[in-house]
Image (tube, rainbow, N blue to C red; front, side, top):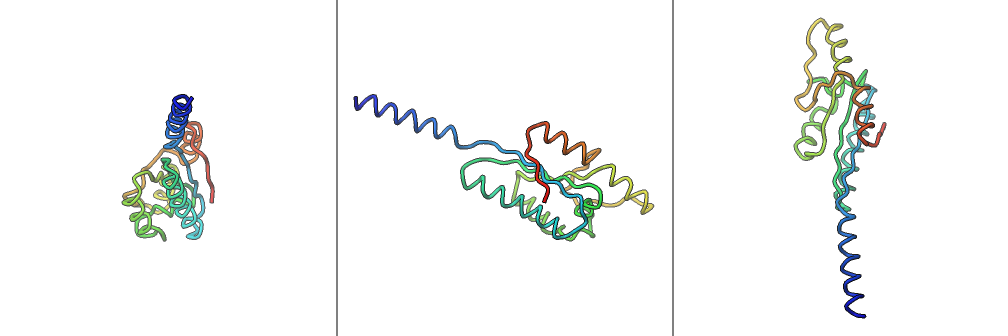
Length: 143
């Protein structure tokens, strides 16, 4: 009887170990040129990452900016440029997607190519990227 109980406890413990280490995926959306919204989005990313790390899970986070929110990624203009730089060095699980449509329109309006921060990866469309991420099972967050 003790052997069966011990085996059951070992099996239960092994099952619990497998329950840990779940992979989560989160898409965070910024479409406002508002430093408060930008900082809230970055706070969301940091808090989500810290929470899942504390429970032994993993998380991949992609922050997608388009429309006025693209100002978050404009080099020399972003109110959160330094914070993004720091976070990208500290968090390998965080990436940044910049809307190509918005960037093209901003550049045309300015009459020159608008420089983006190095951390931002250009995608053809921010909206389409959000759709793709959700279709891939990413949870959607809009601060």
